[in-house]
Length: 189
Image 1 (cartoon, rainbow, N blue to C red):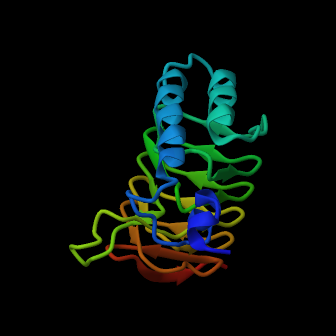
Image 2 (spheres, rainbow, N blue to C red):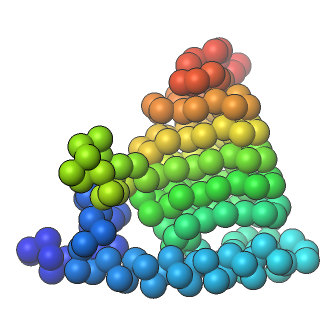
Image 3 (tube, helix red, strand yellow):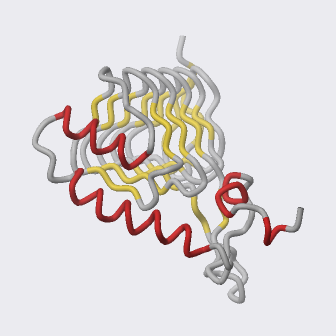
């Protein structure tokens, strides 16, 4: 099938370069506009149940009652976020999810964490296009305050990302990483 005939959302999930002049790009902008509107409602919520309900509307799947998200919470797209059970997301987190974000069960995410699945080409002639790569946070991981996880990274099961770290490569299960860029600190026994 010709790329122009493939659905833009399938191409985004496949990690294809997303150009702003793509004939299907208005479909993306529709979701972005909806998410902007719903995010204002989300961040005006007055209890955790309202937060869960409004964030579920943004992401298109029902959040489990065991999951808690503190406000404010920011996302630019929303539809490619998947959040498991018994997840805790602290204040002022930002999820740029056009490349896809999956958070498995029992994950802890500290305040002001950034999950960024979008990047731009270095070449100035194509720099406004988006390079999309998913982020996967595996079961029971803990991401410390102010950490940034970059496109294409997997955080392994039970792993810990130290506060303020910038994670550019995968984090092995049962390890602690920290720093800029994040490096292995120790194993979790």
